Length: 302
Ligand SMILES: [Fe+2]
Image (cartoon, rainbow, N blue to C red):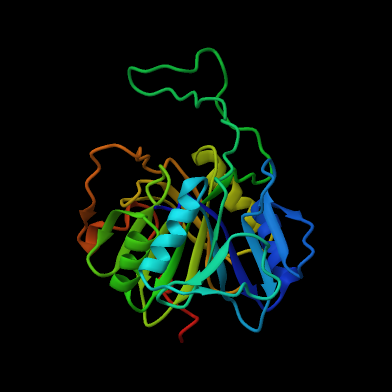
């Protein structure tokens, strides 16, 4: 039994219009919703990856995972065996699948679906010492609006890291990719290094959603576009140690973040990947600006 895709994340937000503007500027397209939620998706995909519900304060509304084929019934059985109860869908929730709560109380929707894969980009043509892939052609990027290809992962705060890790591994079949002590841990249910990560805090909270783009130029140009549109930079440009991806975090309207990433570690299902436990001083980034003081601040429990 295992979930095989992170399909979308849904937030409660105090102002859906501001939220929609943020994610549209970020590069997602609005999808007409009939449930009172704003639906947002990468331009070339059919399925929403972010939903914004009206709420008093920003908080996670739910996470949706895909368990296609036999995995659906198997995941349902695993939940039952673990003593996790199915719950009613929240008001306005998308139809389909079943619902439960993780040990932190986060609502989880398991759906009988595979993730939607974007069409492949043309291969990158980079020139490096001894390896020329671009000959007699100019390499600078064309300008353009942000165009995230897909949702990659979500990072949540938790007040009980071990309990969350146990649930997502033992019950939902996710796998630990790497961690840093009892501070942060990264789980995967696809070939991405991580699709869900947990950061220790005083309690639950939503930290960021992360979206794949085509190269480092796009990360930097998108971040500049977001700042031109009046949004505040969060952290970047830099390169993570755990996951290896290039990153730039933009501050969302509620004190959390949306991240552009590129070149995350790829881990095939059958391989000899060994999860490592990184010392905190060498877990976060190899290079980049200093970490903002409030980067790990969980405003949902202040
Ligand atoms: Fe991230």
